[in-house]
Length: 159
Image 1 (cartoon, rainbow, N blue to C red):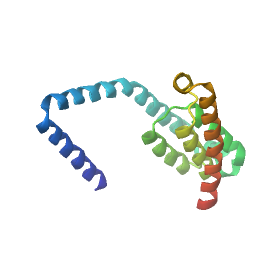
Image 2: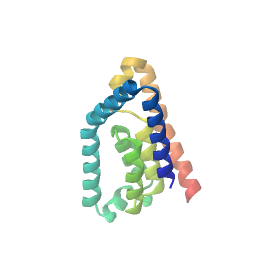
Image 3: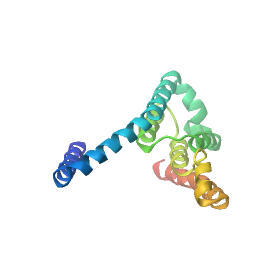
Image 4: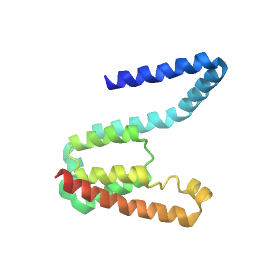
């Protein structure tokens, strides 16, 4: 129901925009389509890779490496994966839910999602270009440490 309301809301504003200025709306839709086509190969690749990984990895394997009994080692493994992976949030959260269902621990998934969203190893060159080495390094190190703090707090609250 909520999703339907969002679609109605978005389509209403699209229609309003089209009525107000047809040429700008058409231009915006063309730009959006081009952006979608540019991101689609990477998006499809990530989805396929994650689907394959979840199919191949058994719940026992997932529990052994990132289950709740793995403690800090499991948190470290997921933090490294999260820090070096570039996955959008709308894929990360369903992926995390799947991992939890297959036996991953809460704190391990919390640190995974936190590092995924806050630490950007892949984006370091771009960040250095705009913010400089010192700010980039400081932001990434603090974000990495904060991810562990957040994960531990989430683990205590949920457990």
